[in-house]
Amino acid sequence: MHTLPPRPVYSDEEEGTWRLLHDRQTDKLASAACRPVLDGLRLAGFEGQRIPSLRTLSANLQRLTGWQLTRVEGLVAERPFFELVASRRFPATDFIRKRKDLDYTPAPDLFHDQFGHVPLLTLPTFCRFFQRFGLAGQGADDDAVEALARIYWFTVEFGLIRQDGELKAFGAGLVSSIGELDHALSPSVTVHPFDLDAMAARPFVTTEIQADYFEVPSFEALEQAFDAWAVARGLLPPEAAKPYE
Ligand SMILES: [Fe+2]
Image 1 (tube, rainbow, N blue to C red):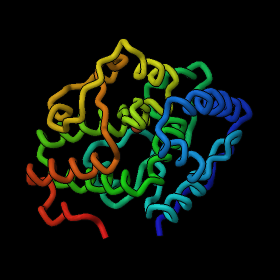
Image 2 (tube, rainbow, N blue to C red; image 1 turned 60 degrees about the vertical axis):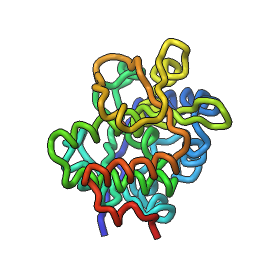
Image 3 (cartoon, protein in one colour; image 1 turned 90 degrees about the horizontal axis):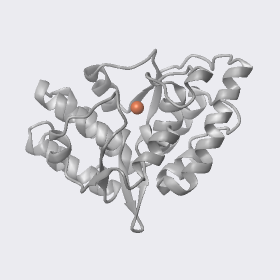
C-alpha cells in the first residue's frame, strides 16, 4: 500500500491564500464547470475553508474509482507520468503558491493539482480514459509522446465539454484558474470540434493564454475515441479497446 506523508502544517497566510482561491473559484465554477467537476468537488473530500489533505482525498478516490494520489515536488516528466497514471496514481504537489502569484503560478501548486485535477478522478469514465492514456504512453516513441502530450493539453488541462447545449469547462488548467476560465468561455477564442488527430497535430504554448480549445461531446465519447485512436497507432493492443469490466 502506497503511503502518503502527513498533511503539512500550513501558515495562516497559506490557508488564507487557499480560501481566497477556493471561494472565488467555487462561485465561478457553479456556472462555468461541467456537472462531473462540481460533483467531484463534493465527493472528493474537499473541506472548503481549509487546505485539503492528500491522504483524505486519496482515500476517497480509492473508494470511488480505485485511483490514488502520490506526492511530488513539482512537474513530472512525461514517461514517469505515464507510468503513474497507467497504475491509477496521480502525482500532486502539497505546497501552495505565494500570495503575490494568486492569479498565475508558473509551476503547478496544490490548488492546480488538487482543486483542478482531483474532481474528475472521482468519475469512472474519465478515470478509464486517463488510465488508457498512461498505458498508451508506456510504449510510445518520441513522436507519439508529443501527440499524447497535445491530447493531454487539450483535454485534461484545457478541455471543454458540451453539456445541455452549452460549453462548460473540465480541464484542470481552467478549473483552477479564474483568468483562464473566463477567457476560454469568452467569444475571443476558437473552439474546435472534437477530433483527436487535430489535437495531436496542434502545437500548444505554455507561456501565453490559449487561443484554441477543443470541445468533447461527452466523457464516454472521449474514452471510446481515445481507445480507437491509440489502438490504430499501435499504442494499445486491440483487446484493450474492449470495455472495462
Ligand atoms: Fe495540470
